[in-house]
Length: 254
Ligand code: GDP
Ligand code: MG
Image (cartoon, rainbow, N blue to C red; front, side, top):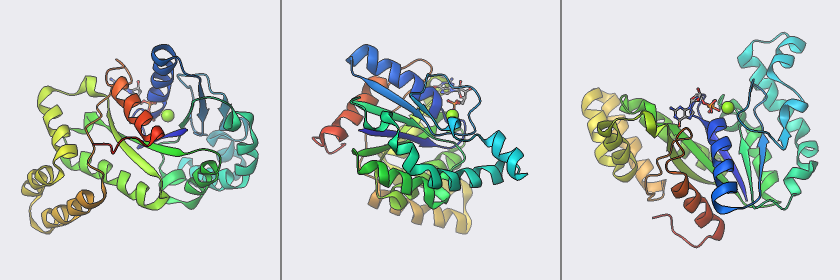
């Protein structure tokens, strides 16, 4: 199965790809391949089996087309579309690895706000099942409205890609006991969570939050809270069990 790590910049995608691949190899003994699809990455905490930077980097695109970093990511999305056949022909996408973990850029243009990223994932899906692991930065917990915004993006990603998305909270090593309760509430009881945010925000914005959360409840599968730390590796067993369940399609994720 392809396991694609998505999430906002700095949420810990690359770190989690590194620690999760390492953990599965050591603890479960499976064969794992790793792919980097972030053309803006400077240093990676893992050794990729395929690296999109062989084809283009954000730095090169900025120079070649006279663009700033944001324009360069839009161009990179276009290039991902143009090179997609060539990329998928690489042997890593056809290897016998049990899981192929894919790191993506935090600039969500490539996978959320433009068509090329999801079109690419659709092509991958013809080879093997694709699961998206959407990472929310747990250190946002002291700001519940930001936590909620990031969480809701995972639903948009699900709606747009039509692929299965599981949501994971990372950086729990930085989260206090009190903030941990906030995070659990968001995942296990979104309505109550939204109510506390709406009360704080008030007015029409508060009403909107309550309406939006109804959509979360309608479409987000009743998930258990997967809380991980790429740094300390806590929670990686739970993440693996969830990924494995989806792979076997033998669980209902509750
Ligand atoms: P990406 O942009 O989503 O790929 O994020 P990175 O993996 O590059 O991580 C961004 C920053 O967060 C880096 O400084 C990481 O060391 C840090 N980081 C990532 N995961 C964790 C974590 O679980 N705990 C802590 N404390 N820091 C983390
Ligand atoms: Mg990264």
